[in-house]
Image 1 (cartoon, helix red, strand yellow):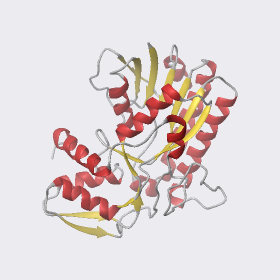
Image 2 (cartoon, rainbow, N blue to C red):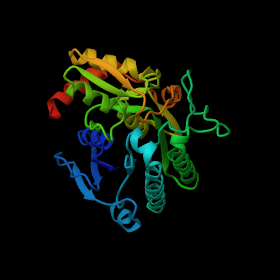
Image 3 (cartoon, one colour):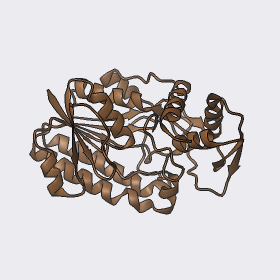
Image 4 (cartoon, rainbow, N blue to C red):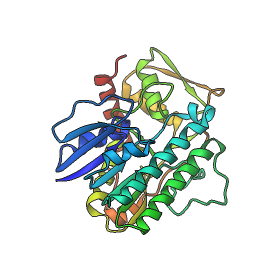
Amino acid sequence: MKTILICGATGFIGRNLVNYFSQGEYSIVAIYNKKKPFVTNENVKWVKADLTKADEIKNIIQDIDIIIQAAATTSGSKDIVSQPYIHTTDNAVMNSLLFREAFHNDIKHIIFFSCTVMLQSSELPQTEDDFDASLPINEKYYGVAHTKLYIEKMCQFYSSISQTKYTAVRHSNIYGPYDKFDLEKSHVFGASVTKVMNAKDKITVWGTGEEARDLLYVDDLISLVDLAINKQKENYLLLNCGYGESIKIKDLIKKIVDHSGKEISIQYDKNKPTIKTSLSLNSSKAQKYLGWNRKITLDEGIKKTIKWWKENIKY
């Protein structure tokens, strides 16, 4: 039985990863820091660790075969605008230390979750090669974008000097069960679901609603991770993982309202923080190398998320 170390196991993506891989043929070491562990099964061992501390990483990385690095300092557009530095230092430090220790312990495979903040706004789906470093990065994303690019390059570097396989996944906006659904820290999808589900007759949306996002249900992201673990032959792969289409926020809100079954009017507050970009991902490389395709439609994903919200989140 191979052992998977899942970092950030109590976060949104991490929790879904634990639930999925603990049901199969793996032994799981689930790393948490601030959030408390949740009930799982006998395949999961919970370990508390601060991944910004080298000694604590050394203690958790023994007898590990695969690392899924889902730990990161993350938040919504409010913090990106008001506290842009919070996404840089800790994320650079924890991954630098983790990759170094993985090198010394001959870890077989590491999956790192990057993101798309380095990509310029575009009406066409972007491939992994479409990033142009000579073009300006959105100033709101400047710090976190360069941090993610640095970590992607670290993945490539360590794969070139070791036998460890690395998969760097540039995923789009992920949503689904266990997402952040509070209005202060959640991304646009989670915040929108909460606003709609808590509303009586109207909601206020930040910005103009014209910005567009590529939204992918979390199960489709996990299926790519599973495929990478079992099928990747290359030492290093940088892969997009997205829906392949973008939807304007105003159209997304309308879909959420429609699937909620509620009668709600929508108004827009142009004075609130918003990041005006339009972006979608071309994931044909993931299909070519791993046979991956997204399976959950946006409407199906919205329905699944609303159902989960009703069953797990208090009004």
